[in-house]
Image (cartoon, rainbow, N blue to C red):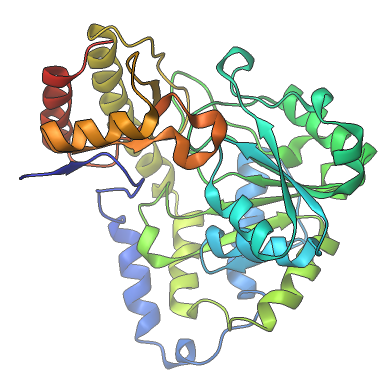
Length: 360
């Protein structure tokens, strides 16, 4: 059977030429063939700091408040080991990216779910976190624009989250992998735009989504210097950093003026795919709204189905893979996720097949 996957969020379009050309030049330079600095090259860290200054108006010390990562996934996983001891609790978005909770368990910690519900715009109700869980928690994981729900946050919410973290002596970890994938005049903020956020927060970013660089494995963490230093202790005893040539390509991605046009072009592609997907689902009777961020559509399954049951039926009957919402936590039950990262014609065919199968 010809199976079409709407599963993993892996951009189908190529990395921009100016980034590829920077990599080629760097690979030919023998100085890049040796071990990189553990914290990342000075040029890459300065480029990240310059991006934050231009994009968010946030000043960063590239020597203390920026660190390069082998993709943000690696950094998020290792951050858990830096701040969670056996018996500690981590406040984890539910539904959420599985890495947060899985590494908490591997480190001997306990996962305390932060429910994300549609009626709250997929934002957690921080006031509802029990006092006992607040005392045990050392870290809180948030992600906006959100994977998997595509929910979005504003600075007012981030201000509340920073205040919550400060009051409870919790490190706020914000996963901002989708910060540049936004629509309808919405521009996602950085949590570090909140006054005093660097006292309690770090933010993880990735070049994977805005520049179609998932296979390149390059990301960064910025913010609280003490937390970044602790992460560095884990990383220097675990990995040897990202290839310097890849970091030079990352500098090009972050600083080349053509990047702004490239990101806007990608937004137009995903917006077109989002609109086609939402229109099809709404025509079928699915009560879904158009997301303002990420390249996912998060939708309720038809009545009578579980998340896993619906995904299995769709695969069996029409050869389309959708991700069951229950894969992201108990609050994901009753939903499924569609990724918009496949060519338009394949997405059109997948939507046609869904239309032949499902009725809400």
